[in-house]
Length: 240
Image (cartoon, rainbow, N blue to C red):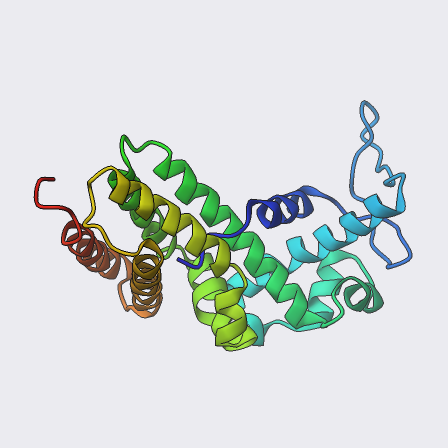
């Protein structure tokens, strides 16, 4: 379930998305507003300036990557929209456009992860948490932004291994924890929780890819959702 990322990474990405440009050595412009006056105010610390520049680049790149894909967007267009210099891009993202793309992907994944966790939080038991979390993840896969950035361009640009490991460790641990709770509650057949977590994650990732590449993502989402639910139901203990 590649949308689940470490909350710390999600928090950093979220803060960067809300930060604004700054007139630092990297060449970012300041678009924050001072209280009461509405006049742009420069961040007072170097760290604040750096965060603002990073945020400006991510905010500029994200809609471009979502609309036209990684290959269809040039670095010059990104820095121009962000109001920074090309040097600022390479100062904050040493790998240039590719590293910036990875930061955008992490941010999009983090937001999806938050929605998954919010949906799962409404569950009355561990098994329902698995069902609601899986449904929320598959719902994310129907959005054009998530499809393009995370599911289509992600593995193509970063490589399969980098894409998988970018956030899978946390996702795997989270899934394993919920599975173990469901086993302990007598809802799932007793078995190694980590092994089952790998299998379910693989199923969800494959379902996500099918949805992303389908002619009709909504229809594919319903089909994949039903199949995942049958898979989960098949793991339940007879008495449940």
